[in-house]
Image (cartoon, rainbow, N blue to C red; front, side, top):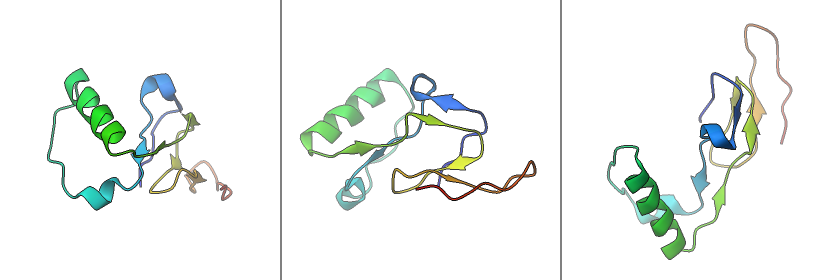
Length: 83
């Protein structure tokens, strides 16, 4: 699960998921950089993986291994399940 603490759009860096990437095993660690982004994009393309995720998310929304968003209950009030 991943949950933003502020409202986000694609330009701000929403977490994306590469389908079937878990089948490939541990890929190691890389610092966040343009080099690592290029390496992962190349890896995703070479392995014909679909990338899924949301275009926008609100603070408190949660996403996981599927692209659906599930708002969770916060101190401000209860969210309704979507997806």
